[in-house]
Length: 400
Image (cartoon, rainbow, N blue to C red; front, side, top):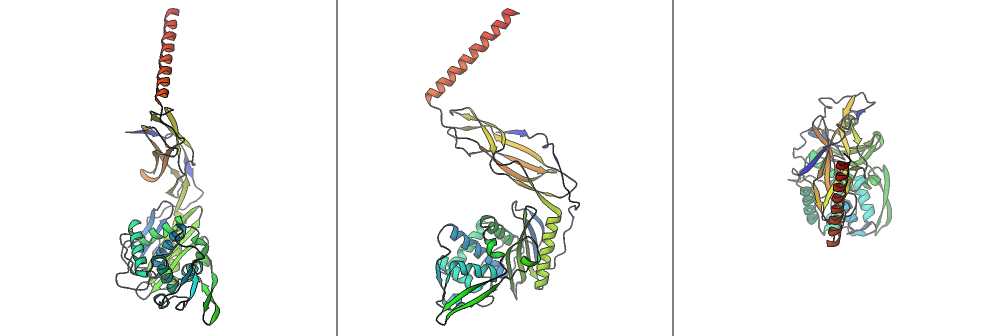
């Protein structure tokens, strides 16, 4: 059974904002097959249109390829300075490419840079083969990761996004994998915000520099842009997963099937503007804030403090007055031994009856299991305490 404590009424705090914009019932009109705007930290969808329709994603596919590359680096299955040899299959890719030649050798760093900046199909396939042994095996990894992320409308057929039967995803699913990449591996922003760069081809003809130009115009046209990936094919038309960070809030705008490149970028900016004009993140209690105490059964101590594990930001509409209600839920007790940081409950935040966030509560300190001697000493202290209470009562009665 949970012990429910209402935290200081409704926090007793009215959060006033300097912003005059109110949340609109209807967001911007987007000329595309599908679109969606998501706040990255909370994962809340702010506005959407046909967000779950299965569509060809073009090179926005590479968000998943990038995610698996950074995951492999993080797990030390590959290293930035590892050398990748280009296969015949990788060199045969059309579309956006850096024109790798068969047997050409490039570092993981340069191939990843070419994928993120220039959307190079040949580099994407080369990295897929390097990580998984073959592109087919890598695609299996992509689909397994998609399933784990809840990307229910997604089926990948290749690692680069060239049109292929059955190669489909949705605006919502793209937002999910973009969020995973940006939250877990924010270092991708380093490459995603480079406008111009270069790599060096090293072939039998010698060394030759090759320029990389970022396909995402937002990095120079929209302040706060952090990425992420564009795409276009005859079937998919013009697509983008655009990420930006301003006012302490990161947004993900997905546009699929725009009729031309200008509308794609304009639509992404409209979505981002809508998000920053109408929503805000509010920081709640800091990590380590004492929120109550919890009983410990058979521990060396009988009660320990419960604190906020990590600070939570809650997403709310901008308006004149915002009231955040807070309810603290602490477990009735824990059995010793108890580890510091063990979950002890939650704080649930609501706005106008709707949940807007949660903070995990944890035990502030370790508690060892009580020994038989500890238990006997505790019982003895209680007996003495009760005896003192009886003596005090008798004295008071005699005095009366």
